[in-house]
Each structure stands twice: as structure tokens, then as C-alpha cells.
Image (tube, rainbow, N blue to C red; front, top):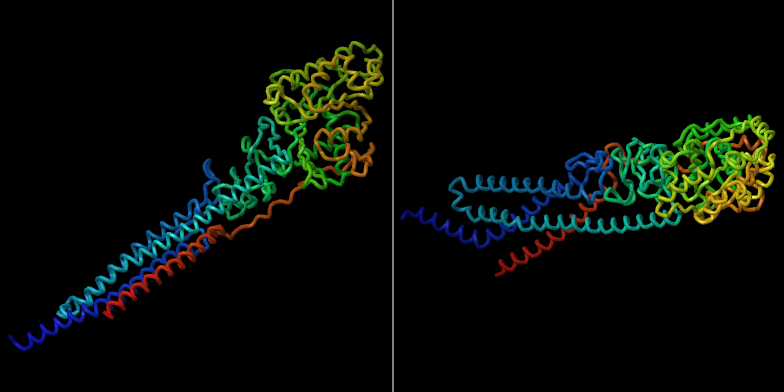
Length: 588
């Protein structure tokens, strides 16, 4: 055998021996470490592209709801949608990239080491590289597991915090609503719906949010798709947003949910004087509130304008007749000092339908707002009572006709009975906490023989056919008060009656020092009662145009940081274990 061949065979045997004995473990270990670091780099590079950007767009876009029936136009809370999307996006981009990098490395090493005769001698090195790349699957799987564990850790911790916050907020809101006895209803005709949760408009873009409450869109804040952060509970300031009825989609009063709505229907037949008394009542109640150092104002501009017109007409001697059977409520927002701890927040819904609306059972049935309140004001036209009409002399009739009094054919007892039948359909049988009965036109009534004792209420009703009403109210109402009202009006008495009827915490309709709230006079008819917004509107805070919600960024950065720490810990343990084995192998 030629000497050269013997030499080559000996060299090949030596390369194989020393290559597998010493070179293979060292090269394999170094390849394993390099491949692990490279794979980890690929992994975190893709993770950084997904988790680091602050914009809503990017490798894993944050897409808000479209505002359809199923979703509000908000970004869903990160843990419930975006978290899983980010995790999957990282995996589906990182794993193929790592696999492609490994394939390229094997191809390159094979081409450079195994294509010529040198491959016979470098086979242990090539095999060590391939083995190292194959074994790198183990630490890379550990990195993936650490990354997934970081996701799971942040998600579980976030879920626990979310559950606690949601339950706490919902509980606090329920306690607040029950303690303040908050009632939310729609004031608009054709609706009058009782509302569990209004729709709220974003103050920036005007988008309606139907589920603005602690839920999967966020515990403390929902983020509108325009980027504006919205409070999810009344105690967090949700009442500062513009609210809308979810049934008819018309605007609701400011502070709904924060202040109790007090529906106050004015019940009375045609020409009973309901509108006149409502004007006097609003003016007198405003005086009570001012004297108690509170604030009151109309909710909408139209109510202010109508009130000003009615006051002008009242000074001329007659208020125009109401013609709407299903009225929109006249809304007055009231707050008194100390209302944070007392029931001094009220939004009054004053319903003044035309008297003709009470002349038939069908019309009364359409007044569904009667089912919501716990207070009612019955306006009795004494000259509509048959017994009073029969008792009037010819001279008295002429005098009343000259004063513009119309002798109505609608018996007030019939009007009351229709309303009573409608209320009886309620779950509580129509029981009212407070009922005020007001006899109007008392100044004219006192000038008749039958009305000389009209101020002795309710005893006077027994002699004019309303004794059954008095007894029915005594049986079905928590408390009943009576008042004979005429012109000029006793605004002190009216103010005291309305404060009691609406549940305002003022001392008998007086100021805390006991002084009378107002005295009748022309200057009071020119009071400064106007439209007022008693809330502080929500200051819209946006996260920036095209920015992802701040909660998304915080969660993403937390996940990246936690996964980096866990991955580093896993790699350190694997490295220490690998070098320990390698050292023991070489030492042996």
C-alpha cells in the first residue's frame, strides 16, 4: 500500500478519534449556545415588533369595536382579545423565522464543510454543528415556554385585578344607586321608559356607547375608538357625559344617575289651572332653593323659554291652555348644600298634560310616566264639581264668567278615579309616598257661598262630592297634604308644599335659619331661574391620534419585561447545566 494512502488513513482515523472525542462536544456546545442565543434574539425581535409600538397599528393591530348591536365603539380590554392576538402573532412570526435561520445555517455549513474531500476529515465538526442546531430546540422551547408563562402570569394577575375592580365598582354603584334611591326615566313623549343604563356620547367624536359600565371593555375606563377615555361608573364621573335614552335615543338630562329623577305628574281635568299652578310652583320652589343656598336651573333651553312666556302671560292675568295630551317633561335640576351626604340632588320631571288627556281611560293609559314616580300633585278645579256648580247663584255665575272661568263638564272625581285605576296596575298597587291636592281658583271660590269654607281642607271636600277621593288617598298614600291656591299666590305655602312633595331636604320649605324663602312680589316673577348645567362636563383625555390605549401599552411592556426575565433565568439554568455536563465529560 502506498505510503501516502497509509498516511491519509491514519490522519482520517486521528481526525475521527479526536474530532468525536474532543471536537464534537465542544463544537456542539458552542453551536448550541450560539443557536439558542440567535433563536432567542429572533424570538424577542419579533416580540418587540409586536409589543413595543405605541400605535394602534403595527405587527398586531389593535382594532376597536364598530359600534354595532354587539359591541360598543371601544377597544376591548387587553386581556380579553388583544393579548391572545399578540401571543399568536409573535409565535407565527418567530417560529418560521427561527426555522428558516436553522435551515440556512445547516445549508451553509454543509456547503462549506462537506462539498470537497475535506468533508471526510471535518465530518465530526459538521455533525456537531447539526447536532447543536438540533439540540437548540430544547432551550428555545424553554424560551417559548417562559414567554408563554409570562403571558399566563400577566393575564392571570390582570384578570384577578380586573375581577376585583369590576365587582367592587359594580357593588359601589349599586349601593350608591340604592342609598340615593336613584331613578332613571325618559322625559320624552311616546317613550317615558324606565332606564337601567343610558347611552352615553363620547365628548370628542359623539359616538354612542350603550354599555358604558365595568365590563370586558374595561373596569375603570373604556377607550373610544377615537382614543378618548370614558368613565365607566357614576362614582367615577359618568354622569358628566351627555346621556341618551336607549329606547327613543333622545337626550336625557344632565347628571342623570347622579341625581334622583323625581317624576311629578300634575293631574287635573280641562281648565283646572294646572299650567298656572306649575308656573307658580316652579317659581316658589326656586325661591326655596335659593334661600337654602342651593342651585336650580332648567335642563333644556325650551323649558326656560316656555317658563318665561308663561310668567309674562300670568302677569297679564291668564296662562295659555296646554294642548298636548302626552307632554315632554319640564325638567328642573336642583342641588342643595350638603347634597353629597343628603338627598339634596333632584331632577324634577314636571308633567303638565292637557286636561282633555284625563277624560278617557285610553288617554290616561298612554301616560306611562305615572308608573314611575312616588309623588303626585292633584289639581282640583272647584268649579268643575257638579255640587259646586249646582250651588252657584246666577250672580255668582256671571261674576265667574266675567273672570274667565269655564265651568267644566269633567267631574274631578272621575279624573281621579281613572288615574287611580291606571296606578292600580302597578306592582305596588299604585301606592304613592306623597300626594298633594291643590284646589285652584281659591280666590274666586272664596267669593261664593259654597266656597266660604274652602280653606278647611280636606273637610270641605266631604260637602262637595270628593269625600271618597280623600278616603281613598288616606288609604293608599303614605302622606297627603292639601292647599287652596289662588291669585295672588301664597308662594311661601306653595314653596313649602313643593319642597315636601319632591323630597327636598329643607326645613318645611324654609331655609335652615327658619326665614321664609320668598315673599310674593313682581320682583320674584322676574327671578333668575334659567337653563343651567349643574355638573362639571367630562374633560376628554385622548391617548393621542392613532395611539393604542395606555392599558394595552402597559400590559404589553409588562409581558415583554416578565418574559425577558423568565427567559434569561431559563437560559442561565440551561447554560450552567450544559457546561457542567461538558466539564464533567472533558474531565473524564
